Image 1 (cartoon, rainbow, N blue to C red):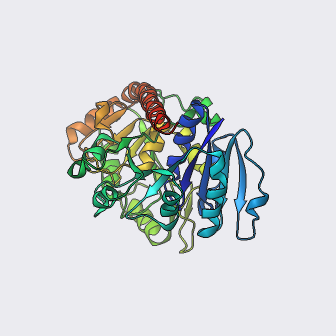
Image 2: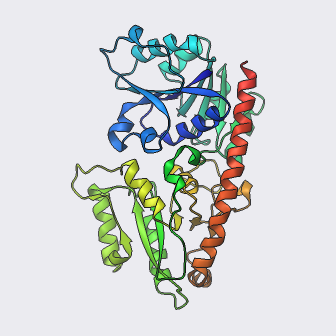
Image 3: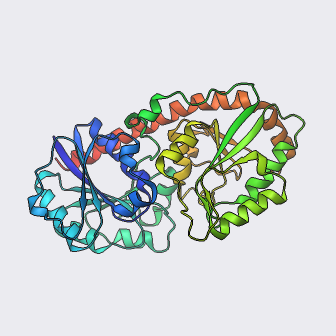
Length: 388
């Protein structure tokens, strides 16, 4: 069985790795994942939490790379406790078992030394771009050889139009990794007309990344509606810590909203951990009916996506957008609910229709994920055909 590499060098955006593994394994390809160990220290073992079949190896400075066994017939996860030349040597030694492909899941502003080394040893890199309007990124990518840009929506593809002759990005969707998760075999909450609808707010509390004033104003408006058919509970699916966590809790208290918010991971000391574990996060998502996006990353030109929203789509949660920027307009608002939270008539209509609307939109999440997975399969097949 053939293998390819996945490099998760930075300590973020690990949501990219599992959709890739899923698409590759379905086509008879195993993955070697080179992943920053800081991610495991902050949130736990993503692959274990999702029951991804794999063999794991911790790489530190004292690790004798030449004594590593040839790859077993499964995915391998290399937890990187060290960077630099050690990682370069590891990639080189594994090169004999792999196709000359490396999926680079966190390309930011310029190539890193390990990225450049992969080019030097003849690998073609597929660079995942998370913000298509990030400074001179388009110009930088246009000047790189043996590199193909990978983006996550039609809007991100359009962002490279100025260098269309040199940059021909591929599109790969991040939500679909449910087939690798035993969690997904569970039936989440059944939405009904009883007495509660659970609305999850994904992401740790950070005012620079999410609009909590918008969220609080919406919650207050929703709860004031005479048409309210079921009482909402807002679940903060992320850590609440430090000064920003205290600010958020104070804002809720000032609006008498504390009883309507669940905060399962809270530590208001300055050294409090700002991330939930994967197990906690997945439990929150499975216990919710709907997600709400207050992300400042989702923009009107669709040149940046939200990892938190993608995770909610994966767990079959429809997404309520309060800022009128649905993440994937190419799917014609499938599994999305868009309202102007300042328009009382729209909030009133939503308050009245919540249970029925969530049931309808939840069915659409299955169609959305199927469409995304089919697209991903097609893209991976195209990539593999280039490197036979």
